[in-house]
Image (cartoon, rainbow, N blue to C red; front, side, top):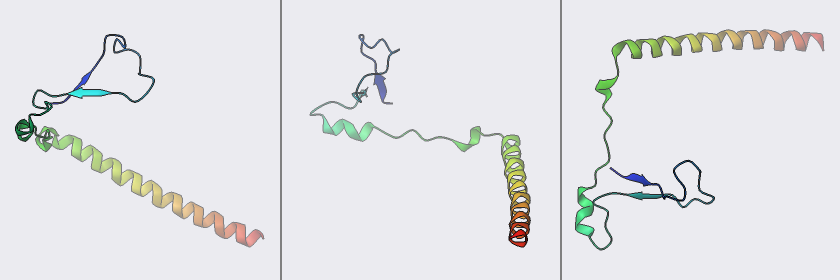
Length: 86
């Protein structure tokens, strides 16, 4: 629930010169330590990911691994030819 504070002079369009970014939260108040227990980290849900997306990602990983194996084979072949040429 923390929100970035954008000062009027910055207008939200210009990045500040130095790293003086400020955040605020309704339960983050000086001297009110008892409110800190109300601050919770957001939990991202995996249920929002579609099974088709997972399948596509797995297919991409499989293709990448195959491509890497092919490239390794070509590299080894080139290395052996280079050694033979020396």
